[in-house]
Length: 611
Ligand code: M6R
Image (cartoon, rainbow, N blue to C red):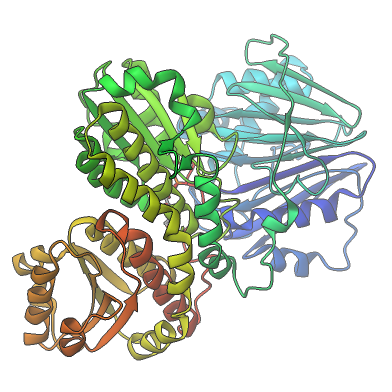
């Protein structure tokens, strides 16, 4: 949440920071700002997108070789020019950018007010920079010392970068529970909240650890911890390619990411499954195979779309491996005193690997002695580093705020994991498992066929684009897909939508159905087919508009539904891979037709690093 960029070196800082902020805009986009050191401390801030900031700065002097920039997702105070980062200290000597939340900011603020400080913004961040200033003034400390002392007073999460106009050849950065990456160039350093703004300059990076503070000059970097002990950081080589951060000819990142899915799913399977030889290898679990085999229970923690993938994971693991599974919203799990035993395996699903609640849920499970396993997309992310073991989904950067390829990437890994646990526990018929493996390998090709239905989906979108509400129904493996389809529509088109298990409709939601209500029914799984047909009849009896996702050649539903989308048949366990694609396209087209920004929907941010 929120994007941070910093630069120190020989180049002009402003263009590097602006480009970096554009790359990070998917993290937050309600306001943006830059501070540049060049003898003086120049500050430019604007409500709106980075392009609004750029336009407002046009013609002004932005030169300087040291600077910081921020794109904001508001927590404290509404999006406006004043609340945008960076924030000045009271004496205007320091400027700070910050991701995270300072939980004790109001106590700190009152103490500062008693010392004569006044504040111009509503933010917790402004309070933090005033605390730093107070230590600097009172004890005559160097910037890094003042930052260290101030951070000892702070409760909460932070990734910060601070500049001091009296000490102009230095950046001081620090993190706790909010990521910060330092890119190592030649006589220059780049700082960012993730690696995307750094990759075009260098692939050598250091991930700052919790409670570490970096003191950065253009030709030197020192890292200390909050106890002032010098640290020996590990340098990582990034494998990300710059093209992965571009739209590649598509109108939006979301559309590109929808179309990438045949490839990203194949990437997630590469080297992990061999149908002829009948093996599945997940490097991450090798060391813990015995513990996983003997586990009494598997708990999946996640948020949003990842939680929907987790529900499908539950069906798969219980079905194939006969191991009890619970799926938990990470935000509930972490606060509800759950029973966690040492023979539990807790799996975190997260695209970003930075979701604050998921991270906290894992920390709780780790403290209680459970084995913790991560299924994550972003390499080197906080969750990936916290877990005992894990598997990357290898979907490449997902920039669109609405998750698409990460969802099918998570399904890929969950299917492999369920099959592997089934092998370890000898819980499933080998012939059946062989058939499932073969079909999983065919999924990318089948998704390519589904993507060819785009024009038909666009037509259906044009028919229902003005509906204020929509209902999504599915059964069995397709129930979580109904939830996911509804979430996709809500988050990018702002149409109210709800997903339900199809049979639940009778227990309340059916009251909503009339001739204006679109009802998307997932009917491509064979188990329960007749029951889904009955549910469609019930909707039609109340004049609802039925859009059904069916298998190719279906005749029965075609007779009763208003619209059908025919997709290739697959095994029920894999049905979500195919049924989710038309739903992603449907929400995409509706959102575009309604003039919405699909990549940056209002109020949302890509990685939710605050709870
Ligand atoms: O990065 P994560 O997978 O942990 O993120 C979880 C949710 O915030 C995320 O899936 C969110 O629901 C997406 N906007 C859905 O499209």
